[in-house]
Structures are given as C-alpha cells and as structure tokens.
Image (cartoon, rainbow, N blue to C red; front, side, top):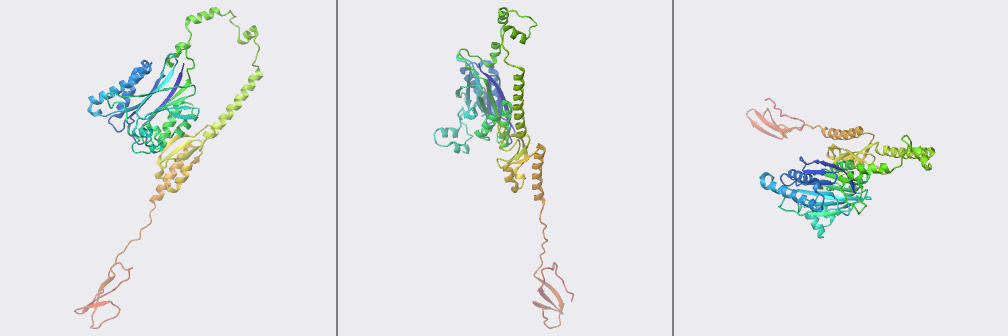
Length: 454
C-alpha cells in the first residue's frame, strides 16, 4: 500500500500576460502541462491535456491505460487545431505521475513529452527522472554540448516533441521506485530555467508541507526574474508499499482498513466478557499486567518534551524574527523572512518581490544589496526600499544652474564727428560727409552695441 499527499502552485510569472500552464492533482494522478508559448493558443492546449487526464480518472489502472490517456490528449489537441484555423499549430508539453496497482504492489510511473521535468528528492539529493525532448538536450546526449553550455544555448527552448503537433506522439515512460519520505517534483521549465538544482533541494529539505514548498519554489522563480509561466506539483510519499502479496490503489485503501460488520461481530463474540464499568487501570490489574509507566516517568517525559519543544520554538523564533532585503540576480529586489544564510534547518523564505528594481537605486547601494540588509520588520524592509528609491529620485532631480551665454560682436561700429584728422585709440576709420565711422574692440562683458551720436 502506498499513500501520497501533494501540493501544487502555478503562476503567470513576471513577464508574461497569460498563464499557458495547467496542473492537475488527485490522490493518484498528477499532471503539469506547459502550453507552447511560441505557438497559438498554448493555454488551450494545456487545458485540453489536463481535462483529458481528469476525465480518465480511475480508469488509469495500468501502464497501458496511462499511455493511452496521453495519446487521447494528443489526438484531441491535434483535431482541434485542424478544425479551428485560429488554433492551428497549438501544442503543449506534459509530465505526469500516476500511482498504479498490480500483483507486486503499488508502483509510481512517470511519463513525459517535451521539456517539462520530473525529479525525485531523497536523503538530500535531487535527481532528474525524465529526459528533455529538446534540441540542446539531444546535443548533450550526443556529446556535442556540455550541460553548462546547454544552459545558455540560444536554442535551449526549441523542443522536439509536444502534444498536438501531429496525429501521434511518443511518450517516455519511467517506473519510479519510491519509499517513505521520498518527494517527487513535477515542474514546467519556468522553474528550472530560473532556480538551480541546489536551491530547489534547499527548499525541499527545509519545508515539510508540500503546498508550502510548492508556493516557495514559485516565489523563488519569480524572485530570480520570472521570465516564463511557473508550475509546480510536489508529491510526498507518506507510506510505501513494502508487501509484495497485494497491490492496491491509494484511493481504495480506506475500504481495506475499515473492518466489515461481520468481522466486528465475530471479534466481539470471541472476546471474553468484562464488566461494563471496568476502567483501563482496573483491567490491567485484573490481568496481572505490571505498571511500566509511573507518574514520575510521565512527568519526566513531559519535562523533556517541553524543553525540546521550547528550544525548537526559540531557535525558530530567532531564525524567522527578522527580515532582510537582497538582490541576487542584479535586477530584482526581494524581501526575505529569516536571517541571511539561515539558522540550522530554518532557511529564509521569500516574503515578497518589490516593484522597485536595482535600476531604481543608486549604483553605490547595489553592493550592499547583494550582501543583504537586515531589517527588524517587514514594514522596515519596505521602508528601506522606498528610501533607496527616493534617494535615487532626489539625486536625479538636482540639476546644476546654467550660466546664461551672451554673444556679442568682437567689434562694434559707432560714429564720431570728423574734423579732418585721424584720432587714436581706434582700429580703423571711414570718412562719411562730416563724420567718420570708427570700429573698435569692445569688452566681452558688453552685451549690446553702443552708437555715439554725431
């Protein structure tokens, strides 16, 4: 018997106007579909794929029926694109996990088409289950590119397989052995393009609740830029199937756990009669069972538990009692709750991504932002960011006063009476009737020419 619980989150990101991703979670079936952003109606294709799986429901009892559901989703999308010209060329990637029953017990099977991924997180290690159906991934598998080169390659988003692009599609199948404590992550490339494996593993190791962990991963992707839609489904294995003699679906275990009316009646008849008012202590005394838990032992245990809980609560309070402002990508300014670097197993969480960016603050403040600025409260962190933006605006608004520029001629003609002789002090004269015109140098401080009357 295998029991699962899950959490899911999907977000449009910070640069797209439409969320073309779609997700589905049921007790045994989990799907992430990423509509192809470069094609028409990618959001419709993703929604159709998820709707096909949802309609299949409990019919997905075998690997063959699981694979058939992917084929049905592909055919439905392809037919819709042929029937409606406005939907021509639409498609979607898909990654799905399904818990299937069998004679050997429950087993988890993952199928994918495209570059949406599945990971398994176990004992602190994150391992990719699926293989991308993309041009650069195939080049890496052929040895033509390294994994580091693929991360920045211009064609890293060119996929080679997707639902809806043809009448048939081939999906890769991965049986995934699981055990109690494993976490299975399904995600679109909006997460893996922004958040590296190390940071994903950090979130999965520090946040126990699957819904909170899914929300945190989406927030981290947005904090790193959020260039694409982001979708995450996180599956926790609460109980694994260790017995080989019976395989059951997780959504059918309730009936196997609750005893039938006949079994209850049989057990009540077989039980010896006991006084109706006999208490638990009286029954133990009647049966001669020695008392192993005394009042002192109970008090001691409670004290130990109280001390441990108090220490845990204090460390948690200390780790999460402050906020800090930091920019890790040189663009976004993010407010984290916690302390930089974390304390023990309590790691900082993304509280909010500010609308103010690094471009809105003075360059001299950027280095300090990269190291992180601690504030005692969320209000203080927001105020610090607002002060940075105000500082930049005030600095930009201060302009040096301009000195008016005056242009004057280097020589100014003026007229003086002519008495037939040449006077001194001028640079040149011209006789005209009873007067002469004299040009002379004028200091630059004079802004207008002056005419002397004859």
